[in-house]
Length: 67
Image (cartoon, rainbow, N blue to C red):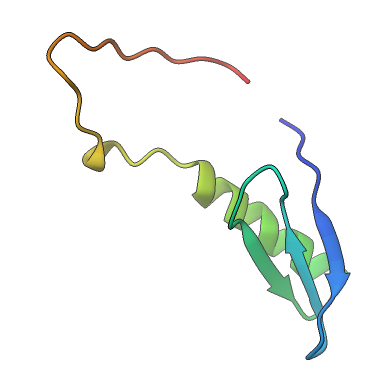
C-alpha cells in the first residue's frame, strides 16, 4: 500500500508528518528521516484492527478485502 505523506518543518524545530487520507494520523521527528519512520509506525497503528471493540450483529458477515 502506498500513501501520500506531507512532511513540513515544525515551528518548534524538527518536522511534522501527516497523512491526508488518514485523518488524525500525525507524527513528528527531529529530522526528516525520523519523522518519516515515525509516521510509518503511526500509519501501522492507525490501520491496526481493534477487534475487541467491534460489536457484530447476529446476521452480520465479516469479510476481508485487499486495498
